[in-house]
Length: 570
Image (cartoon, rainbow, N blue to C red; front, side):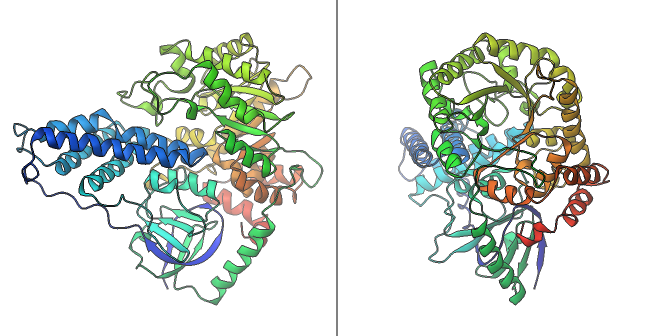
């Protein structure tokens, strides 16, 4: 029996046999020259055709999915046609290039390596995109060889999927009826693997060194809450898995009204991106939408979508929540979501560059037209539409954005708190903005100076960090100072992944957060825990977490005071 420790990203206890991700596409032999009898022109045509074929396949998969998975696949499809990758490969075909002529396969391989290395050197989000490039490279080489594209292994029986990490395009289309848990040796708590595992409700452990070497077919016990993987599980682990399955079935429904044990209301909302997402969220009992991502309307295109296109996309979400709050985030372009008509992919550090609201500085007008489209869509539906801007860092930015929103006819305008400066000056910012929404994913990585995609930094990139909780409290305290016209505190929601952790949800409630937004699959579990505590108890636990010296101590201390978590297998 061997135990592996990592970061638990989705609760759940399951037993299953390991299937490792297939052996990666083999590197083409160097120095082989052009394919037998082929000319540079013919090899060029093969590269272009393979690139288009891979892009079309990924687009087809994107069209059949929704939400985060759709966005990941669309972004990977764009990478398949990246001029840096394709043109670089074509240049290497020429016999005059260093090292002599290459076959199409070898040229794509070397070009992909060069592009990935360049992205890694940029750091931050762009470094994480290097994984996408290598995935696309393997897909194009497989297409050139006439081989199946890399992907999830086939199996007649459910299995635990293991690997170093999963390519975004693979993770996005996992079949949860076959894959019962995910375990990776790399990745972080906010990696593609982690985020999509939460969306699918799959127990998952990332950054567990060594799990990619577990023998094929080995039975394992995965505890997604504890972040552990155990080989050769015994009767106790099997019983725990059976108990979890029973508890999960009991947690499958949320009544649509979240109230603490003392009657304190704390609405549970959903994070969505499309009309299909919204329909699922409404069916899951979400009390509204706390984060409507608008990037998917802009991805996979060279020009800005028309106002009419945007109105239709936003309206497809609004129609599912008549009379309920829908918080829509304006375009969060930049960093890992570059757009050719809006952002500069050559920035040395895109995560700290022109992204989110800041694109208004370099491309004025795009934000104004988006606000016009949101207002037009809101006028056609009965949803209570709130709008917020990402990456607000100063009071001047908050004042400018809220003025633009109100000029467009949107009554309720707020800000995302992702930058520590916004948390620390929340009272001034909320003197202008009507509400704040904490994006805990970015807030954590900026507070801890830890790229949220990197497995080695997973222990830093943890929303339980007392410093991050201190920034949440600072935001809530600032909201209490900047009272609304009715004399009450300005609302502060959480729409980052932290809201989906039932234990952390209790702490957030105690810190003063007024709503929580998450993937719809997490609603029932969060509600099941919150309804067992009073606001006073939540405040007591929040104080313990704030006073803890480390993230692990904060988490362990809170969980010790919430036995319901173990009762529910959370």
